[in-house]
Length: 183
Image (cartoon, rainbow, N blue to C red; front, side, top):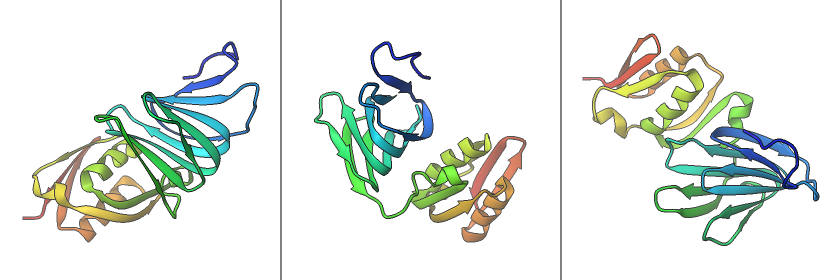
């Protein structure tokens, strides 16, 4: 959502989900993204924000330029290119780190980049990307972790790749997928 006009002198966007922004700085009309507990003020930049209600973190990744991130009760955090700020919603803590790749904005190019994620974390991304529901048939399969890239593949191709690289199987019925360990 966005606030209409420039009544407050600011351009404000309210984000639930994920979006990539490329914004030119305008001193008289600052651009601000409100994502849950965060306010991200653009200082002329390209950046990604991921703020899904069911995720425990809100992630801000700066690709180019500069942003200022405000979290209530904390000092402002400025991000430089290739830095990511993760805000943990349950405990209100933040963590800033530098990444050497574009995994947080690769989705805008049709690439799903996975770096040491559990299959549960990967499942949430696949659910959003393919508009499906994924469940797990057993607890063992939840321990699997993955790293790699998926380029604009069909869901079945992704599931077959997971099956090939791990000891798991899947069953797909319409928009539901169940993933289980191979017994």
